[in-house]
Image (cartoon, rainbow, N blue to C red; front, top):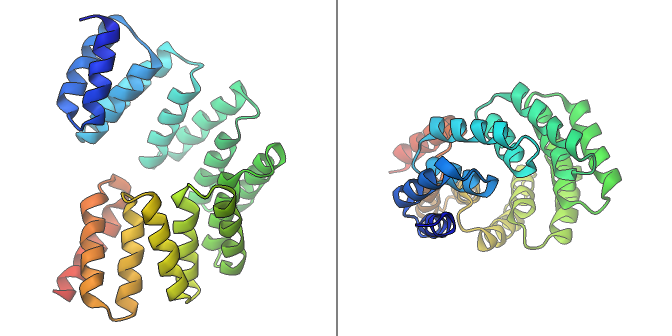
Length: 256
């Protein structure tokens, strides 16, 4: 099988959810033909099967072979962030900025790492830098919303999330974040509408179901809350959400 055929077969298997076949094809391909596209596909297949260590080593080797490939660097930085390795995430996002000073998303991603460390001022400066490069950047506005929401400034966060949602109406994240901020501000009906709209755009967004469950629980709609929390548990598998999964499981045990 040619390199092109191996990649096409592996990519198709990945799309169809046949991850073991995808891994087999892509591993065979990468023995002799190292491309960033194939590496990223193999990493995705590894992650889908829970092989996080293999995914990491594949990414690490990929970045060593293709040090200037921005997509690989983003994947590496995102992996570090998800694994709570914030220092390495910051360094890797900075590598992207060093390669391309106008790569707006790298500023915003770096901002989110600083936010996770409660370094609010650094997070704000990076978002402002991103918006200076691209004033209508919905990702940066959404991130600024996160910064204000984390500080309990929900009115400001709601306004920023609305702006982000208007700029990119096909992106579910600003809508789901808006729903969360509205929920925290006690506006449950509007929060539910935004949440449902966000889930229409991305039915696999686990946190959307968590929010719907919380909204229904506050309104004593117990049966619906249980359904939404169960869907959250089916979808949310990331290691960073272990505590939240445990919390939801305990809530479900109390409701049943």
